[in-house]
Image (cartoon, rainbow, N blue to C red; front, side):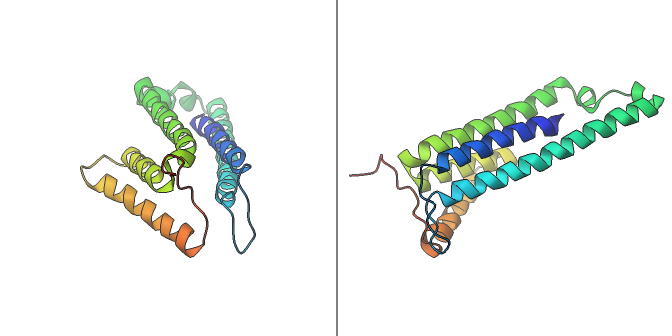
Length: 168
């Protein structure tokens, strides 16, 4: 069931990226525009959401078939009950926090610009992914931001948002 809920949230995220990308230019194959990244990443996220939902449906079917055919499994508690509702609730809270973080990123990107917004979001995502360490997490966030900036802005010539707050 967890895979299906995650797939639904991923599908919403992918659709949001596709919708936000419609206002931006796609550009050409050799010179992609600023709308290419959100559209392609939204499509990839949607593809991952479909894959995850198929995996979740198969797991549900296997679990139901195993409980029907094996009396021992039918008497065993589900994994959510074993882990405890607090663990499941904490996992859902983390998922909701990441979705909220990505939505905030989409809102702040045109206002604060690529470098500041991406550095903050990447630092927060690295903090969610691993136990926060005093200096490693911000260094990873800034490094990932600088590397993606170099890749997209300098090597691929993709215009990245500068931010309306910094405009003269």
